[in-house]
Length: 342
Image (cartoon, rainbow, N blue to C red; front, side, top):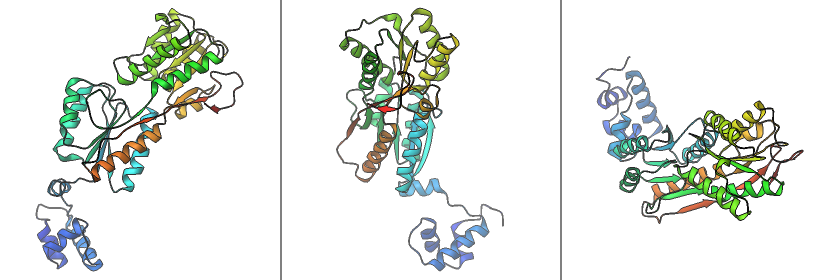
């Protein structure tokens, strides 16, 4: 029988020969005899009855859904995080709902407003830019939130971040050890949290190594994407001739390597390359790219566990975790190199 407006709990109860309360128990996953469960499910199937999940969740105050919001679902880092978070929350009985927000804080603000109307039980958010309005919304949110990434001062939320500044220092120190003299930097937008942290790490590392801070050795891509990286790498090589380039992520590193090859130069003989994030594309590139591993899987797993902890105990003290990076050395920075971790 096709679904109709009359396919209600009352009709299901009548067809199954049980009480409305029994139907409600089965539909809400509460204990019932196997016989009652089978009769109710059969009657519901015959009537085409589907429980109103929205109404049920509002009544129960629980949706069994956790939202994940990231800037770009096409970025391999976020894809890996999504799979790890999904694994953890699914095991705990939640569904993961994914949102790709870009780097515009207004999109994240709209998402927060929607989620605060009862469409999810918690949120894991990885914002690239913070505005005062977004900070206000984060402070005011009734929804449990865990942030993956750096937080502005004054926001007390559970938080997991990588020390990306330290990661850039690992890259610079490695290149200095390889005898590289002119170490350039391709960053993403510097008005983002990761862009600012990575620029500071680069400048600090060069200073500690006693190297000059040349403005023409630094370019900022318009985004942390491959296509933005192509433009940035061309701009860099138009204005200077480095013998090494540190890139703010692996997508920018692959783009830089593409531009280097198109100009008839070699990696690493003419220009060494180091990326960041240690995604699969770094290992698959030819030559394989040395990259700073920011432990994205570990950060994702920790964020999921922090959110589950917050859902279980809303009064738990705020926990903020810093994950230390490591450098995975491959052929893009050392000729004839076998992979090694530093």
